[in-house]
Image (cartoon, rainbow, N blue to C red):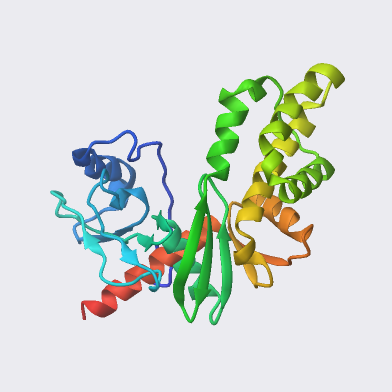
Length: 280
């Protein structure tokens, strides 16, 4: 990245916390960025599970209320003199207990690109986050395992025989409404997706939309105090954010959206700038 945060080059791999031992992080990083390195020491800013207890180095959580980039970054141990790796700390909430790693960087990026924002940031994903933000601080947040539940139910439950590709927008919105109106009936509604496939030939694309709508509807029911009457921003993958926008729009809630990858880069740039200022 250039000094103003513009991306100059990009590289990716499947190596991560789930595959690497603590000593494996540095070689995995060097395999990616080796061609970019010269004789000068390269500053590297990292976020996410790399800073977890099982990651490269544990970056202690900051406790809400706090700024998304609350303090000094944590230095990771390196042997290669060409890199200086610093890790962004995660954020925790003691009651009700909750944690985030990586999302705080996206929040920092959104606040850096949307000065003065006060409201709620929803970060859809495997573990969706609803985050109350005020005066540049994370005030409170809640996590929902919606994405993980969808993956498990669509690939490892009886619904794997029913849920296919494609999408049905009308079926999705109806499923959201049904789940929000009667969340206690969710287990029965989920099995009805399978039953309708067997008895009525339910289209796999409709089944997918209904499963997603049921789970997101449950999430919206639980997150109601966060989005009701609030200015809501969606930060995540564009396709997933569009699905959440449709669900919230059906409840009369307007939203704005920002690309999650772009917000991560903006947050990393903000973290780098903060590090430079504290070391001057």
